[in-house]
Image 1 (spheres, rainbow, N blue to C red):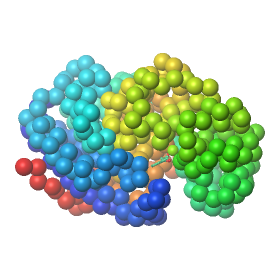
Image 2: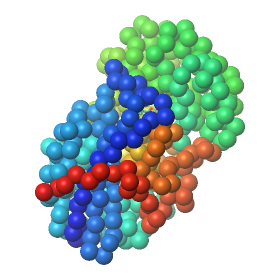
Image 3: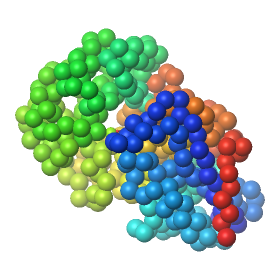
Image 4: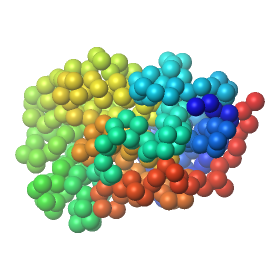
Length: 364
Ligand code: OSB
Ligand code: MG
């Protein structure tokens, strides 16, 4: 598998509603796209999309690093056999590469290999991976808004929902969670995400008030993640790690008391190979893993969905973010209307890119 061309493009996509991340208010998503090609026109696309407020690198740093990587990839022989995730992908990136760049380059290699072998990306890793995966519906906004979203989503088939909390007063967040739990079916899984918004006492007050509501887990309830076990002891709520996984070595994770899941965002963690290490270790120690997006376009989302499907196909993943985009890089953007992503709609063979939305960056 010899790469003959490695090209880089830039995009800027308007969002349908603003994205609020820490102190950042994002109205348009910006990123880069990598295209690898061989002499027989096999192609692999990958997305590099550092997220302001969450990624350590800026887009401009990602851009400079991507150019250096792509130069190295030209006329590079990709490993053909063996486990692509364990050897192939990791060989081409290293610690010096910003996380989003590793993720985009590895994704392009994954998609290229799949096209070259005539299989879907998820089947590179697990030939028996199924043809759809469940998605957790993302609920954001006021109580009235999240209740309306929850009604609509459960009636169209979503079996897991996640409410973003932590931006309003504790009382109104408690009220919000109770209101949603009341109107959704008992079997619908309910997840919460506080994005490290709270001090310990506030989080405990909140946790005690919702602990009887059958919450699957709460992501990052505390600004200080060192007290998470104590939070669990005092509230009975199971928690999940997301932001606090940044910089953590996968093998150092332990199944602490009350730790219910780890949220894996390959764009933030540093790509597919490191995510694969988290997956392997999580399975070894019996931790639930939830593959999630960092608001990538549909190119990135599909790659994450393929990875999720090959690793934990029955766990609802955090990929319900495409609806934020007013415009998308695929002719056929990712849709999850019935609570699932159906891969039949997104074969690698006919992945049609909106080329008019891409501006090429010369790679000298
Ligand atoms: O807080 O989990 C988050 C997306 C970008 C940045 C941060 C987060 C998210 C998501 C992704 O919530 C969607 C999901 O996990 O369901
Ligand atoms: Mg989170």
